[in-house]
Length: 400
Image 1 (tube, rainbow, N blue to C red):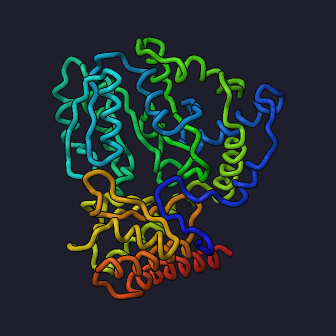
Image 2 (cartoon, rainbow, N blue to C red; image 1 turned 120 degrees about the vertical axis):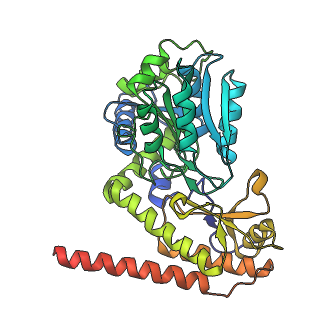
């Protein structure tokens, strides 16, 4: 029997704050009743601010981010359409597989797992597409498997520079609400996320931002769909009522989670994630280990994938962390199995939690055979966090 709290350091589902959990502890209610629509409409309005869109719609599909992927594809594209995407991690790979299974012709660019979206190659292919055969470009904003964040704004610039009319799809499952995301400024047509990561709720909602251009495309799309029909779900954005039974308790939790984001301020939430992530990365560097991200400019502020030394199995690090120290780390997925373990640092998170993750990881690494010095990673992160707190205190004093 384990005592104490299980320390959850996976990149999702993330920790659910206590007040969010308590907000879900409500009696069942009539989803057709007069109060329910107001609840949903308030949530949709605040989610538009999180997506940073004033012109797009937000839709809530009971399901997951994967369900929102499928909704985005089936409502805006047609069988046989060509789409352009890159494979550089497990989730971009799964998205490509889904597109193929749904009948799209997928032009895939394979790059190293640890690289970002190949913007230059996207530009070359889009510039060569004189007849506009490519109907959509897919970008995994934050590849959760590798801890890599790609430049969505750069892809939009490429589309504009090539005068290309393709829809821009973005997987923001582990970025929206944690990393800077700007749907309108970046010209994103379909933005996918879920309730269980930066939005600090249980899994159960696929959340989709839809531009006016994408809504227009949905009127001409001939893909088969039923549950994920935009026409049905679009009414929710006007009335607050769903075409089928919604996960009422999760909606109450999401309402409280959005209140938390609003109270902290979205810009402050993003800055907090950047500060905490940098501390984790400094800890990893102090161990003498490398992250999966090929360059610091690609490093994710929501998850760090850590390459273990030769002779050390990352699966052992994860096992030891869980069995001996009651801490859960993310595993290496697919080709990264045994080579990396991941520390998720998103959602309801502070310095103490990150320091705990580094401390437990140090013990698990050493027990798994890594030659690192106890306290080295923790000390490096502590120094960074202390520096940041002192700088904040100085700014507050100056403001006063």
